[in-house]
Image (cartoon, rainbow, N blue to C red; front, side, top):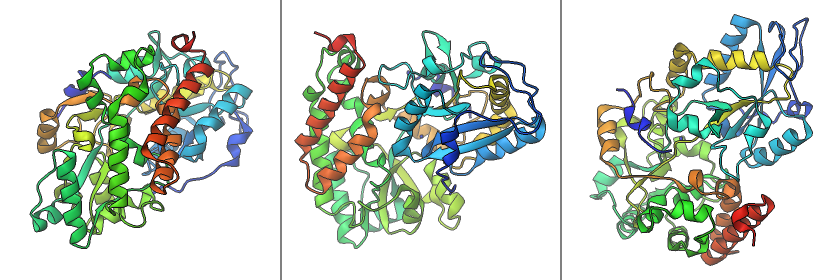
Length: 447
């Protein structure tokens, strides 16, 4: 089934190596392979090693990108050296490396790059607008890696949407209905808890997962004012005046204190979510639809595609699914000595047959932002998606939100342990946003 629906939207275990090699900077030659200069050069390719820097969640856990890199090496003689850092450290680390001229040849970062609060990859990267594959990318994804109509990167996943995946057997055994608002959600959680199971698998140690309810529910903001994102970016509307932030924080705090996240959520890791859901001891977790395929890949006896249903996160009585057309993307460092070889790698990754390998080799992925490749959505899933009201997520369209995502994750941990109140969290998010805008010399924040 072609994913034409995504084209209409406006703008989701590998061992993690903390590579000291990242500190070495750009790629190095091996053997007698030639190297191009900073302007692209004419490197012969064979014998060259490209360094590829990424954060932990920037690459699929299945290792499919590394597998494709091995095929690329066999075909061209160009090796790709992957250097992976923890999610929480990557954004600051790569900024330092870019500013010092020691960044890897290829850099994986989150998009979009057009926001004022982004890493500004247009300043650090090679322009790729003239590459053949650019014309084949979906427009929403192309926009996420562009500035002023110029393309600087390539990306692969289709639009991301986070749902509550729920165990159908548990719901059926307890006579539960899919909740459509917060009151119903609480009732479902309490009945699952009373049955001796944990209502929700939440994992805070990775820093990002617990933040999703706050900013994937932008439909609530847009329902109040369709222009609210633009007004926030122009500093005409204040973040502290968005009532849904405090409401959802209070609801999260209430659910944590009620035991709905279990007793170990502050030490849970997202890497263990697959095992947790496959165990049948948890009722729900926040994930993309493709997470079912990832569970099934690791736990084939648990037919996740059959046993796990999905519903929109009802925090704040939200019922619009948040759509994120942006994702992790790859960029070529303009200071690299191997620009032409890196372009070769991008060309290789974007060949239709390799796009298909990427989709097939990434169990948690349901679609690519390349419409020439069929999605993995079942007819039932597609019908479900088509039935939903959709709204753009906050972090992709409002400045100074995504850049503090991991910090907000720490704020939520502090709230859960009693060190901060929900209002404290709102105040801290607002303060950080204002400080970041001032540091960026954002005209909208200048008196």
